[in-house]
Image 1 (cartoon, one colour):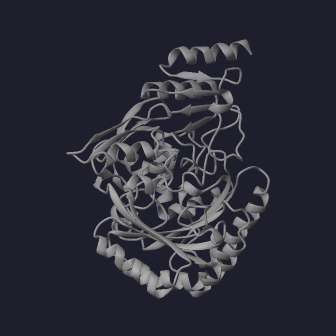
Image 2: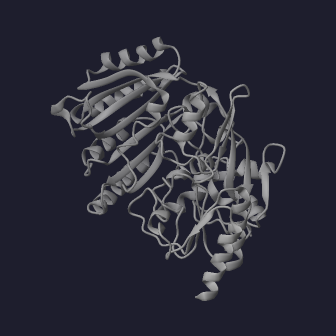
Amino acid sequence: MTQVISRYEKLREALTGSIVTPDDPGYDDARQVWNGDIDRRPAVVAYCRTAEDVARAVSFAREASLEISVRSGGAHSGSGMGVGDAGIVVDVSRMNEVAVDPQGRRATVGGGALQRDVDAATQAHGLAVPLGEIGHTGVGGIATGGGMGWLTRQHGLTSDNLLSAQVVLADGRIVRAAPDENPDLFWAIRGGGGNFGVVTSFELALHEVGPQIDVGMLFYGMDQAADALRLAREIIPDLPSDVSFEVVGLHAPPAPFVPEEHHFRLVLALAAVGFGDEANHRQVLERMRSGLSPLFEMVSPMPYTALQQMFDEAYPWGTHTYEKGLYLEDFTDAAIDVIVERINGTVSPMSATFFYVLSGAYSAADEEDTAFGGGRSPRMMVFILGMTPDADGLADERVWVRAFYDALAPHAIGKGGYVNGILPDDVHRVPDTYGTKYARLARIKAQYDPENLFHRNANIPPAP
């Protein structure tokens, strides 16, 4: 035991950051992740402040035969893989600087930055990069796995906008990944997840966005849900390029725009967000209203940063979560029947189902340019999220999520999914997610991480 403690002290002395062990104050905070259902106890958490710190922590873990978990800023995944039992957590959350070059329209983002950090810094110049939809999500995880949200129809995935990255490899080397330097690694980290190293810095392309955008959400009772989904089916193919669209099944919040008699009622929302011509957004809303009269609506201009944090309060840290997801080509009549039946069976008031419409710039990207798996044809990403405020009831949510997924899967595009939404019980879907790219990813894995040091993720074992 003394020898182990001594080795940890050597790591403590080697870092410009700090370490936390089970005997240190703050250990329980250091091991916490967003999903309250995850309760793991690492041997040591290394808070790294520089790429050199990360390299020292990785080398220490390799030499001490400690399992490595890598946690960026948010630890926001349902899997909670950023923290493991009895190993080392390489935590880069202190590396959260965001530097914006407004003339060059690019940002240099630390591997531990949160989405809200990036949005705040870039929106100061009327710029943005496509990210997810929860402000306290870490950029590192979402960017390496793809990254989809409100801007995906306009500007693609987060990974499509990655220009270069600084990566710490399994052997402790610090390298640059870019089209002109380690191009295979650059290809792999744009969609291949955390399999290939620890990304300590991202260089991201920026686009003109906001700062004010137009938001419209029309809410329908579940007795209208089938008609609302058929209406969405008609609208989606004709969406203007500057309008994004989502369908959400949720319990109406007790917000000022929700009539009191509908508070906590199970509803279906059609959401349209306009990033350009106000007339285009208004046209989509009018088509929605004329097609089916809503129970109530929320239509308003708002800051882009507010849109990006709109769901933060509904999904706070400590939420107990289980999820599954798949790609759906269209709201066919058969799929609509399943969706309405299963959303009607939602148990927890926190649980929700999201349908992200992926088309436009998402589909314009070349399929082979990045490692992102799943295909680029127009589609919807379906997130089935079972959530409870505490452990009580999560077992029922798992049953609901799995039954919903199993019923909808026959209507899905293939057997794969979105790598950022794959939990440990779904890792068998990873090869299907990447399809023909899987073999190339396994070869690149063998080159950069032959011992599979970085395996706490949607893992791609190295090719033999």
